[in-house]
Image (cartoon, rainbow, N blue to C red; front, side):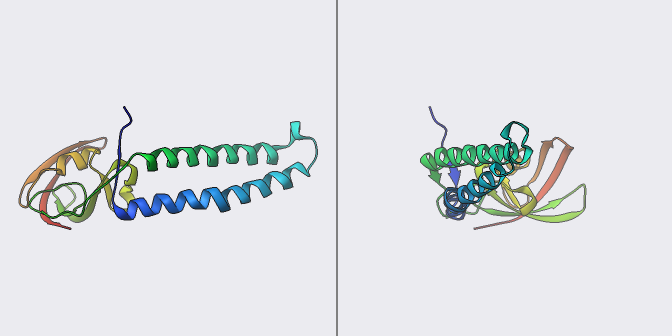
Length: 156
């Protein structure tokens, strides 16, 4: 059974745009790099050619990965209820240990980008937050240790 890929509307658009870029500009750019590298002579000792071919393989692998993801998309519906944390909501928390307020949007794993405030419902912090209500204190077992958050707000 193929696992579905949960995405918000914004995440779906982002993946489609990445796929389109790789299929067009990405392939064109790498084909040019390969063409130029071939001009340097003997391919058996041509590091530029080897590097370009490796980059081409990475691009093609990412295209295949994106195509498979897009075949199995489960669109996250607009959240109607913000009584508790679910995929698709924005949650504001107070980090008890670091004495700071943080805001996260809970998304599916394919869309996660923790450095930009997008956390997966599958991550340790995401798992701890899902189901929590405003005022709850949750504990997440993360690789850096135990993290405690107080839920301050939940919004669409």
